[in-house]
Image (cartoon, rainbow, N blue to C red):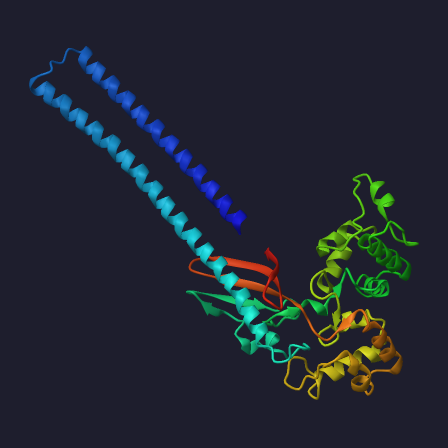
Length: 375
């Protein structure tokens, strides 16, 4: 937003400077013609008294009026331009502040969560009745859209980051499953890319069998070092060996670098649940348990897990035993039932067409902004 405003101000300053230069040149030319006319009258021997003097004075007055009219017109056009620019900037700034207000509204909504120890798809932050659609504020309005939903019907509210796979903490086996399911890669290709991700984020220079460390990246035509540190944003995937831009676009909706680093069993999508290596019956069983009797998400009878310790007791009637064993193993380091970071698409408007802001925002449970990206 600050960049757009700075660019708009610079363009307006350039326009005003050009206008002032044109006005100055026009006034100079008119003065030159006026002086020539005066000299021509003097050369012809016009006396400086009587009717001739009165005619010369009248001529002076006419030219003065013309020059002043041009000057007044120039000042008026500049003032009008400045006024229009001021109104435009005012609307845009108001819309930006309304968008900031939307993040505070989202944070207040999170504070109203009645079950802060666990999160599910029927919590207040995903409830459409929480006032996320065209909420009035300061003479304008804002809308908070759910970015996790790709269907035709628009959903409003927040989406937790823990429903995604964290690039910095996901086990290599989970990343491999993700590459096969989302990227439609062969097991060998998926293993190579998942190991390369592991080598990129770990702190050592020990290369996995199919991975890549600093030697590989420094041998490229446009060389760079291996990160050997955590991902700071998901776009870093484009630097990892073997990961194409097309594959990145497929993976982006399912990965994150924000939040607790764990996957929330209560909010993860069927695709993400499959990356845990569960059977189709296991994935279906988790969804059946979560959706309750009406078999729909986001309704009052949803049944989120209230603790990881209850995985076996609550899911044994829905999930095969081998999948329960796998979930209990993964729960020690990678699974959770509580979310810490939340994503939203904010649209804010104020006044005319120029007063419109749209962006992606991620906040933590305390309301601290982790990401703001203008769309």
